[in-house]
Image (cartoon, rainbow, N blue to C red; front, side, top):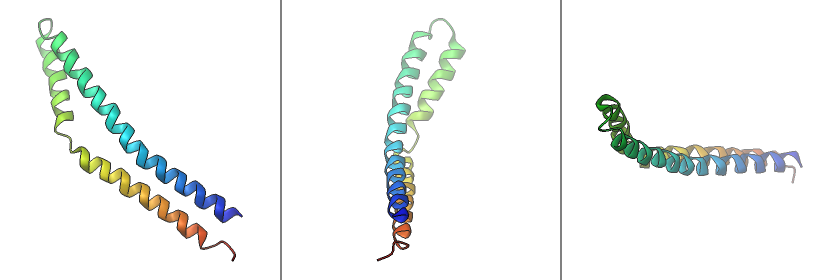
Length: 92
């Protein structure tokens, strides 16, 4: 019975890792929009702060999100594959 529970936990963790990549993308996209709005609001008050916020926003624009999502999906699938290894110890 323990191999079934362990494999189920591996599958659950793998799915959570794959979903975590999507959540990270959403959070960083939200941060990018927040940085853009904040840079525009302080543009006339502090030029250097506006410049740094704009640089942060542009850095998030140039991030290859497909590579980050692909990384999270591959890691999640590898963790799920370990769940199938745990099933090999289940007595028939």
